[in-house]
Image (cartoon, rainbow, N blue to C red; front, side, top):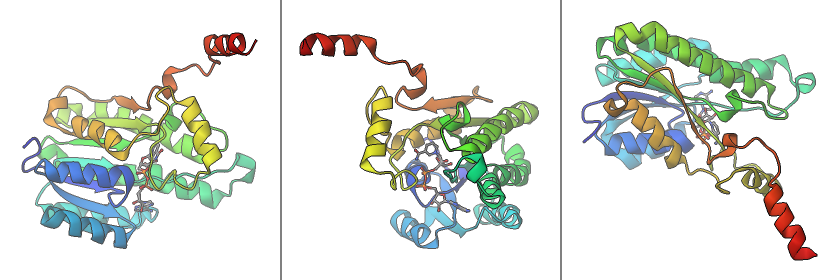
Length: 260
Ligand SMILES: NC(=O)c1ccc[n+]([C@@H]2O[C@H](COP(=O)([O-])OP(=O)(O)OC[C@H]3O[C@@H](n4cnc5c(N)ncnc54)[C@H](O)[C@@H]3O)[C@@H](O)[C@H]2O)c1
């Protein structure tokens, strides 16, 4: 099996993309320290996948909890080959409506925890020539209405990924990011039907990604098959960012002709 004997930490493992990735890793032979805030969902995942999942409850918004989580995971696993910084949260408010507390919460989870977790994991990763994959977002590449904290945190995350990749290449550690577009997870489920329809209209593939479609790309980058890939950001968005945003003039002309 592709990941036989690999030892991994996945943050945000209890739901969505992280849960899909945990299932893939375990199915391919890895042991996973599954770190998440949600103890109930973690317990359900561990019950589903068995003893290859070691659940660790952690609040990544609390900087003091990040390094002890990584240390506990490495101790339980007996080493570390792969760190997946996947946990993330958003917030919806323009700068003038955004409290500093909310800005800090998003930064703490989406960026600070990645810095702290990666710093804590690097000595063990260097020992086993391991790698890091971070779940960023297309919102780190361009901007969205009302997303200042999320846009900034994910853009910062992409900067950190590139820096880690070049600084630790000489130590044999690879670092990459995956940037999902609209993905059907609890993070996006509060959206109304109208919001969903607007997303689908903007995606050339006209559908949301399933969590497993993002997880498969993360799994590739974390595997030895990606042994020469580092410092990269893989966009998985159904073609959304390939589009300039200009209208489909041809389709509009055809529709006008049909209606005339
Ligand atoms: N769903 C999308 O459309 C989408 C798009 C682009 C990027 N992403 C990114 O993908 C990643 C995974 O998101 P998802 O869509 O699977 O969402 P999700 O809500 O299904 O999963 C996120 C997980 O992170 C955990 N988490 C949240 N705050 C935490 C904290 N303080 N401490 C520990 N764990 C915490 C949650 O409990 C949850 O299990 C995130 O980084 C998100 O920004 C998602």
